[in-house]
Length: 235
Image 1 (cartoon, rainbow, N blue to C red):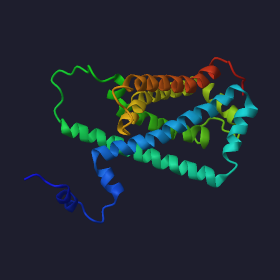
Image 2 (spheres, rainbow, N blue to C red):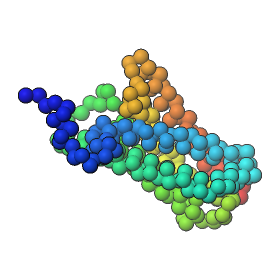
Image 3 (tube, helix red, strand yellow):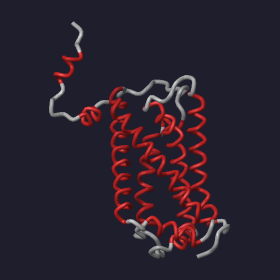
Image 4 (tube, rainbow, N blue to C red):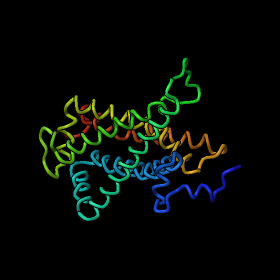
């Protein structure tokens, strides 16, 4: 006899929250990844626009940094929201990856990725690489722990010193390449997980995702390249 919705609801503990039920399901995890992905995508856009003020000059980029600290409670709240979004996004992504692996413990005898892109096949690795870079980036240009000559509040100086070193440029460019690939598939999947995709708008969404990934990756990458090539002032 078919199981009714009432029978299914009886299997769920009454004390279980809707969020907990959402988290335990594959569809729920994908939805949470999409929602947190929207927040992180908007943050990446805002962060790039702020960083590009480096090309205006020291006063602009340093003033932008000071503006972010005008309201410490607001800054703390924004960082907390971002931290929660990152944790949910990463944890859900890793768990979904393991579920997919468990669903097919034996790999394909001959694998021909005809319908998947390089970006989709490397999402877990590009995501983990971005996470590692974010930790390094905070320790470097936010806290100054691993920076060779960190000066509090002098963002222009700190950026020029960091990207005056070839190693700093390489690390940043590798991370931005990973970001581009991650956004390429991530933005496209975001629309699907939120139910905003259909056959009619499939191609425009793909073009938007690819375009956004390229613009953001190149926008961030332009900063270290401009510094190492001497296109902006010296420290």
